[in-house]
Image (cartoon, rainbow, N blue to C red; front, side, top):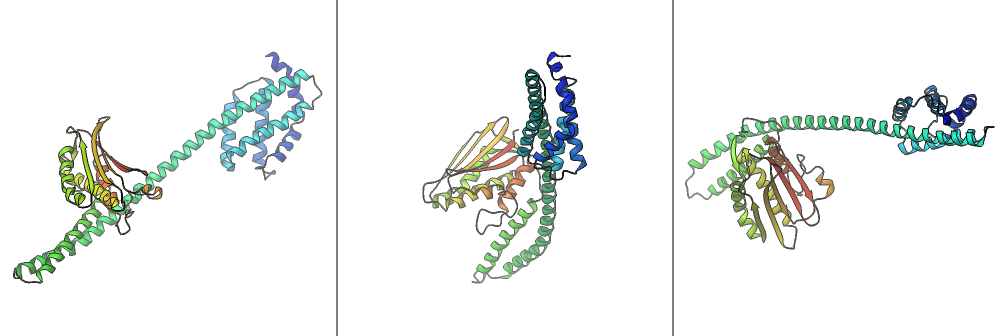
Length: 374
């Protein structure tokens, strides 16, 4: 046996005789042991005391890991604040140290016992922290899995409702459109009321677009999702930006495009075009609220074998509380917005195996589209 442990042999024997008294003193000092009559509390404290005695006696250090795990689980079960729990170790060590100081033994034996006592509590704290972190990670993972599952369920339900609503809405809309076209053919070309027909047709087209957006909220691929086209982003973004030139010119917005001509992916060009157009349209709307120079900067490059498209504008910062839910259905950054645009964009990008993120600060707001290359 180690000579240091030999010196603590007497201390161990004397402390064993005082075990009941020591545990009682510890219970009084620990604030979260409010139910002192709880047999489980007394049992766990007794086990900790026995492990400490074995350590002081130099019998074995093997029980420290198991003891640390039990103590960590006990803390979780009792719901004790972690900082408060760590403070309790110091309180317990202090109680035991007082008993050691009062023992009728040589000073060298006391010092050696106190050194071993401090070492024990450092090690048991370490083991408890490790196991507490492990338990926290397990709980965090479970919560993340639950949140992911709830989000999937929510989107599935929303997709079903949206699809059902869209189909129910589309049927009468198709009938209305057909009858309007029939009336239009029967009207003389020079009839003044024909302007009303044109207005009705325009509104029908808007409703059809909304119906299509509802259909796209479904998080599963449907018959409209033909994702096998070869898409060159240089061509796609060039045509999209050209479509926005008139409105940008009219509103003094400087629209700049810098993109590599090598970016390519597979998917539906129509859907990706729609997603990009909605993001740029949002940028144009945002710039209506600023009086300084208005800019939209679109750049694309190959990063880590991924197509990265950045759409930046120097409009107002999006509030933090909105950033967390900006891609959720029916969440809008505009006062009168329907909140479908960005959620549809996200669904489209994700159907193509990509991601859509938004970062907003005082200087600029950036939407980042990331899609597979090739």
